[in-house]
Image (cartoon, rainbow, N blue to C red):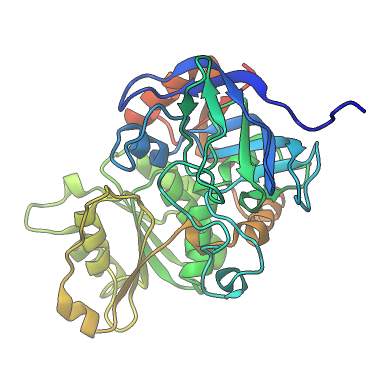
Length: 381
């Protein structure tokens, strides 16, 4: 009888050979999925600031590597013991897993699955090995066990979310990481209530998604903070009610002081969406005493440390980190997709540019120059 098991696939991928180097379109080999794994054909992907951090070797400097983690795809084949997925299913990858059985997955307060724990280093999360090879037979490292800058990729079944095929690929791509992180932080972590006040530091894709999440929750004052004056109009389109440009303040005024004046003593919740320790501290200072909360969403460098005014902690303020905005991916991403489809959330505007795979380096240029929010990269072009 003929062997029907999946075989290696030859396809194209955008490979990063060294820190900060332009990506090269290369022919690669992708292994078949092992047990509990799924091989996915990537329809479109997008570039996130997290990809930039790995590309610049600020985090986990390992090369050669296939970057990318926001995407929409279709299941091509499944490995042994895979449940809930079949060839042809519409899916999005996530940086976090969800097995629904471990202590974290059954907890209401944690979204870091113990079965496939998150790691910054390369390797699949169950066995630590890779699934990509170049034409010389040398291994290509993955990113976050996802690697979507390839026409085909292999992921753990716990890191895949099935979507209604009616969800457009571009929208699926946007809510697989950045959009989900921002909305989730406002909706699930901050648990904003109608009339809440918030400050968002950094109006990139994640910050603007926070604004949409805050608006959805009924926040009445949504203050956006960014050095780029063009972000004011973007912010207003996503729900920002007030805008602060730190470069335009008087020298004797701090951003936190201005926000305190605007909000009557500090905001209920601030969100740091950049990954800079000094900004994290300023976001913390911007919240009110008693129960002010700061949520850090930006990815810092490996050795970054944050300094905070210790007495503010005694006044009831708190600061916390977040992965994927506190969302459990399989549970909450389909809900976000439904909210987007019925226009309760408006995230389509995050996709400001589109390119084909051959132009992937243009996406890097646009993001680094501050000209794009999310650039959708179509893999078949």
